[in-house]
Length: 497
Image 1 (cartoon, rainbow, N blue to C red):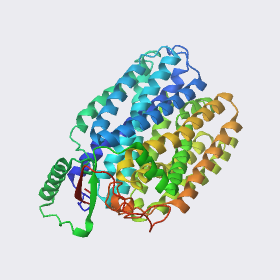
Image 2: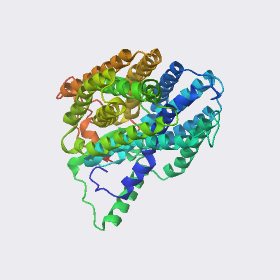
Image 3: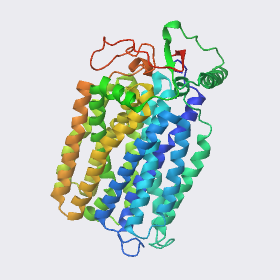
Image 4: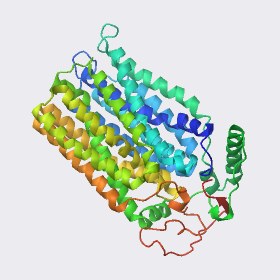
């Protein structure tokens, strides 16, 4: 799989699986766009600005717990089953949100919607990295994660239609907007049916015949498309694994956090930094524009759409550099760079320098830089741990990192905005910048140069005959014994599928 040239099958993976981020961007921005309308009398939902921030935190809590629950199932049951199941959960919960008439109903539906999205993260990121060639993995991951902002752009523009009181009443427009989001998820279910299961997952779980069939089918498609034979795989590119139908959670945890403690610390720093900055600010951006710049609920989505477009352009522009320049330089640069730009943003906001557009320009620059770094957090954790732990590792670090940054951030900003104190909100920007900078510093000292390498070279599978192959552990790159666990059967497998 890693040796394949770019082909149509890889576009199919992007179109089928990248949609999770479109849905998440749609969800988060839609609520941000609708927030100003929801808090108005006549919305049919008696909710305050502070409760909007609370709802955002509840959504994140659901995503964290959903990631852990579905992440474990993804490693155990397979990538495809779970990225179908979690999408169904999302669709049902989003549709139910449209019928909320009390804050507690809204909170509950947001929790379940978040659980579906959190489960998607684990299943999707692990599947993408296992299906995309090594030389393209960085830019594809950044691009797919960046499509969050395509969903955000769509959510901002189409919410304008539903917020127009000439067509929809104040109590119905936001409900129709949520219903359309659920219907979009239903369409995506049918697109995903054509994305294959990960051959890596099948091979390690004792289903080598199915894995071989999928790989052969992909190779046939690529050869037909390119009209030339593929290069043969050399013996030095093969590893021996001991296949097992399931792997105990204790062994997964011992490998991920006992063998790779520095990588674990790195992932926590990256996830906390990006979650605090992104969730804290974006979840409350609609009410911030309304309370401090006098932007009404019908116009706020236009500014949110501009914000989203800038973010997507950041991922699109900077993404290829993660493969060309390297992971460590780009991740550290985007984290620290976005933190530095947030400092002048604080003074512009506090002093009202340049008015609305002065604030918008600096905010856009901050997130143009930050968006690729935030996406790289998911790329990092999906690359640097063994295959058997990949989905659960994504879920764990997402849950812990986002639980800390993604819950505290929205609550803090929501409370600051509701206070009416501009200095407090400005202080929130500085706090977010500091947390983001810590992630960049951690990357400098703990980052892994994973660009262009097979996933099995970055971290050998637990079930490999030589589990200390590749980069070894954080403890001792050259130490370790040839631990051979109980097996179902032994198999020779090509690196990269």
